[in-house]
Length: 321
Image 1 (cartoon, helix red, strand yellow):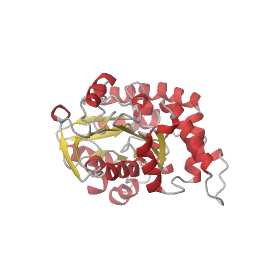
Image 2 (tube, one colour):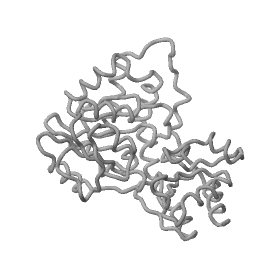
Image 3 (cartoon, one colour):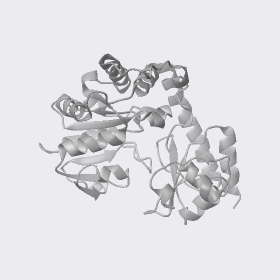
Image 4 (tube, one colour):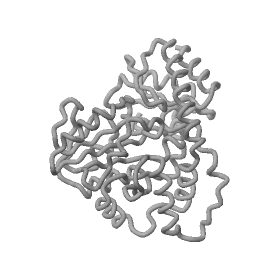
């Protein structure tokens, strides 16, 4: 089970373990409708990326996030951004659980906490949260930010915020504010293999990140794809309308099967069952991969099916007990 409880994915391991070939991967929170323009881009693999091209990527992303580009730093994946910031800030911190495993590893002296029990020091949390899909309001986040002391930070993982930007705190970023936000490209745009993310924060902190990353922090392909995708406002708005409707259809299927899905992020749902491992294996024997949890065996996270056929296949597997 360890191949699938670490994070989503692992279809090849599932194929080797359970057999089958036509797998339906519902184990991740990645948009099953990838941005369609990547294959049409002309990428020159013979040269290093130009500095102005990286700047254009950050300008395009900043326009989408709603803040000044000087507060945006591109990184080769949010995972690296989290660990870099954690190493630069150091000190003691709390991370809200349940959430990403990396949150507990990014600062050495980090301790888990429930949201209601969080102290006034540096706090790490995700909004929307993974795996339960909890979304905190802007007002709640403002309160958490105001409670940080002079030496404390609010480190906010907004990896899924592109689906609905309303609760995002990106507009609050400033040099005098101890707020850092992490944004992911791959989840909303459905292109996790591009390995592109962003750190939003005070300019002096971003300067330190750039110094740690060196001269060419992001690959030419990531720069080209990211710039074009963030500029595709029509696709972004269309997807923001489409994903909630598909999530509602998934909720209906889960409800008819007797489950009560939780979560406000349209890219995945969490259900609580008597034996999550048993349900995971029952679906896997039908070549459907979901996400179990070693520390919470009664949970199962289910990603958004890519189409009506995938949803119907999942519904049939749930009904076939």
